[in-house]
Length: 388
Image (cartoon, rainbow, N blue to C red):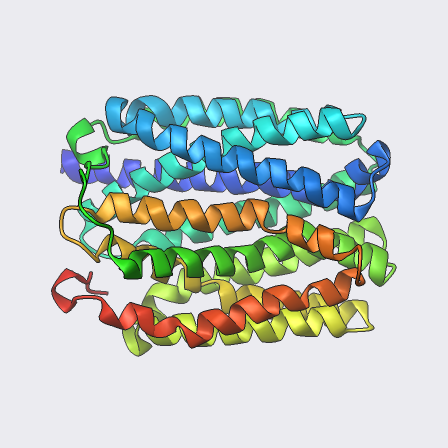
């Protein structure tokens, strides 16, 4: 009974870190228009600075993976949570492109550290449960984004500065990270990513990593630009524009809560393929809509479609090779999160030559490529699959 309670507590703690990470990132995202205006940047300049956020996240993931291998999740995850929380305040203090660039780089490192370590702990919890639970953790991350959108909409309506809102969130995050640490699993030998030596990485792992990058870049387009899209292209008020990210994150959460059951019925290939198709349809609808309400509906459809795609790629990578599950998940997650955090910079660059809404057709194309490549999951050895 004690072990069962400890496992449940560890699962709750993992939910907590995922929700906190989604909340911190989401709160920055809904403040992008305000920070952009205060620092005097245009879309293209902001796009270049968002690249620093992605670069920092990628560096944080590389560092986090190596440190976790040596020390174990229980020790490093609370530290990563505290660091990420404190770093979330920095963009709110930026006054020009240089200070914002430095702030986004540091925040990216903190986000990357926390992200890869909490996913490593999620893999451990899933192995102990002996059934799929990864989608639920990612749903909680999205739920954190929903909470951030609602919080941001309210604080923006109160005309609070980003520094005040992000500062309160940072203090809350520090407390939550330290309290949740008590329930983390302590077995270092279970939590650590096992080294694979010089074993050649299967080609399909890199294909899945590439697809994760494309899908999560499409997510990143919604995360980083949907609010600006409604505000700048369709003329929505700031508090209304913030709901674009909220609509996307809400359907993303709902879809991930249902993803495991749907996968059990139709299979991972169908979830990836049709999810990408629905995602492309939603993004295209939002991009081409002349009405705010239809654009909100489009972002909601996009969130529903993309919701189940990434967990399928993570799960397939984790079960592709015996003895190399965590290492393969790290490869797919690393490229994927590089896409979600750094990829949207491409949207900013495209605004030099096309309007923002037309630039969204790029992630639409990426979703189509993903749908056409979904059969990469079919090669998954049946003996390595986790039963639903």
